[in-house]
Picture 1: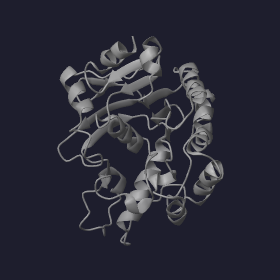
Picture 2 (picture 1 turned 90 degrees about the vertical axis):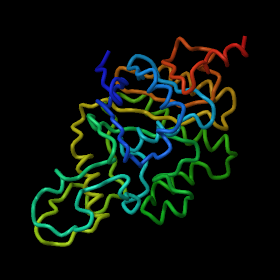
Picture 3 (picture 1 turned 30 degrees about the vertical axis):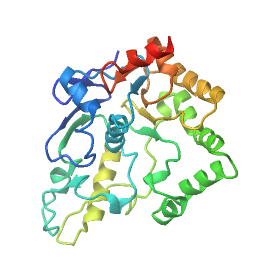
Length: 297
């Protein structure tokens, strides 16, 4: 079902046509040294299913979050405002001289330099427990860099709650995304300066690097026409949940319509180990699934 696409040569992926990482890729500097990447590169095949939820399992430090971070960057769900978009994320080839008259800025721009993508630019939902809008460290910081409404909603959701109750409340948007019709996914304009529509940066006016980068992201958002396959990215969503709530979450994941959205979940939960037939399980370390299952028998 769906289109099978390539990741790093013969490594196959869906939703994103292809990803090829080169030596100068630096947006996720720790990805290429992880066991997940080394394992899948040796196997020369990594398939993300469109028929089942994709679940990445492995020990701490094996590359699960690093891989999800790469997907989150590509789908524009993991930035902390325009000023964070340094040369690791956007590069123009004109960094030393931002004064020019040619109308070539969109053609020259490279997003995530060192990573070559073919993608439909579909929107995504990214969730990590206690993850604030913009990947900020605290509510006050999120407000200061332009995520006022999002930070306030986060504060309202977790106020006067235990860590588990707070995580459960924050999962409401994820549950809605899992159950929503496919047409309900869309980009939301947040904290991209200069208005929502991409502007023509031409003429002999000075264009600041951060303004330039925000225009690159807005152009990517504008390129999405609504026909792509949205992605839901969950990084250890079971953290701090009680047993009943965790099982309810996994039921929602299993019941999601995988023909209209792609699910990628990194987890330490035992649920996928006990129900492997319900998931497309990706091992960050070879033999990890069997080793855990042997201890459960």
